[in-house]
Image (cartoon, rainbow, N blue to C red; front, side, top):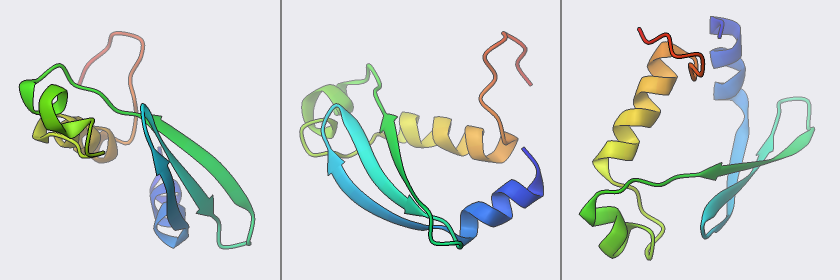
Amino acid sequence: MSDLIKEKAESHKVQHLFSGKNHYFLVESKSGEKYNVSIQISCDCRYMSVQGVANAKMCSHVLAALKHIVNNSEINQNGNHK
């Protein structure tokens, strides 16, 4: 992912719509176009199983994974890890 994509992302308006098994957001680009984004977040730690999912919150493990994705600008699915 290029720096241009990161810069564009900073200019988007994000509205949280709903959280359940998936988390739904309405994302509006600078041009005014709107897109529906859904994210499924899960972790097998105790916090998530006891209170995280029930209260639409995430654990530090999920936050660490999301930070890794943002910092590395990719979700690597081909088995090559940096």
